[in-house]
Length: 132
Image (tube, rainbow, N blue to C red; front, side, top):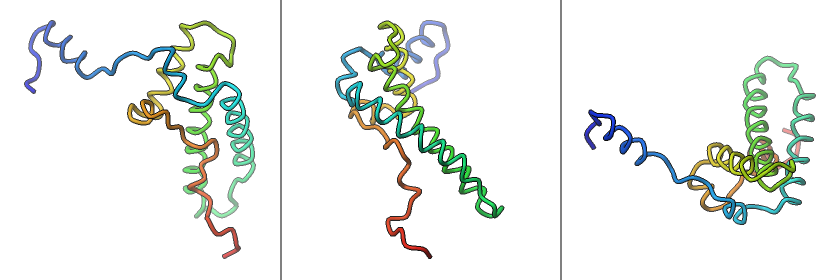
């Protein structure tokens, strides 16, 4: 695709790369308002717990920060979904804005499939909880 050289071709170029806008009907592919609220609460509690687990060993600090970033990302996803599902009592413009933010966070493919990350980033926890 050649690079655009005039204003009109620039607009066409940007339009071709811009995903279609969100619709309120998109909310139906995601968990309901009650499920979004429950997921948001779980993500909030996990973030609180994680912040209290500051590592005493410096060699674990990078891992702790990575877990914190993932916990924040999961929380943000569920927070924006809750807002989109009328959780904050605002109007349709805000719900659409919330859907756009959610789509930005999870990506177009996950958005179209209605896939969300879990409220707690379980991939940081070992499947075998026995002490090592």
